[in-house]
Image (cartoon, rainbow, N blue to C red; front, top):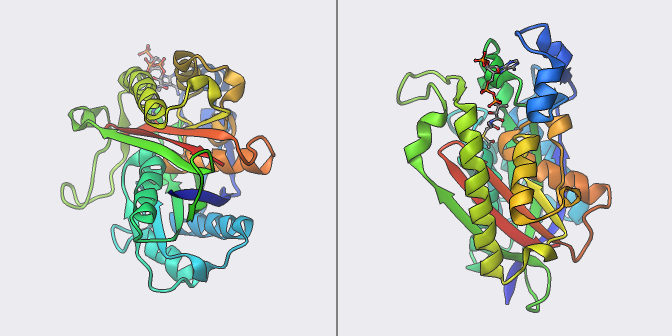
Length: 321
Ligand code: ACO
């Protein structure tokens, strides 16, 4: 059977680090409140000149290096973001130009924090249907540019960054590597729980992030537990067989609660929310890259990617490295 194999991972973070104490100088908050409620200690924030595309390009180059591949081998780019450089053209086309790829399909995908899991599923489908052989799948964000820096309930939660993977189709045995199953969902009934209060066809502005945090939290735990079960059933795998969960890094308490619902020990969850905060579509590939590079995730490991975000959108993908 043809499966999509992860051939390399890469990531990039802005140089500037902003601590909770730094934020406490700006809004009425404290290091203690932020750590206790979210697990966040610091986040990276893009400075002038650092953009979603520049972070995406750096992460992509590292993923290609790790895969030992030239950009000319890529025949598809899918970039998940809610903070594109411009409304159009797609940020993916900037990556295509900067890497010097051939005139291959390159497009952005908007599913906010679930964007990377959506992008993996779309690229996997295109590879398995024969439309592409080798895909660059990217999650990249500069959420700092759409935060209301006077709203303490949201501005403390997010950070900037990018992560990328190279996926390549190959004929493998049933127990071989590659993406085993993915499931995606959305429910627009809840769009007012987490949204941006602007856009080209409404206000004509970019807008700022607005969120009902408690409601988001409640839905996240239920939806994620359900989709994880669905993916495990689709792949015929027991939760206990998972080596690593690489979740969207929204909040340490959501990570704990989701792992508990699956009966997985917290040691199997890759956590970066303390250092990166919530980087939306970038958080899963950033965490994946970190755990691959520090040697925790090894070839043959069973890895679950999962995310939930504005829309609501949510999804999960199970793969063998
Ligand atoms: N510093 C200090 N106090 C704060 C801050 C802050 N940064 N933010 C809010 N508060 C105050 C509120 O004003 C409120 O005060 P009040 O009781 O006097 O009115 C109090 O803290 C409690 O506020 P809640 O919003 O009820 O606090 P809660 O315990 O729910 O924690 C949080 C808030 C951390 C946002 C939590 O709801 C959460 O993590 N939700 C998930 C949201 C999320 O992760 N969104 C990311 C995008 S979606 C996703 O990625 C899954």
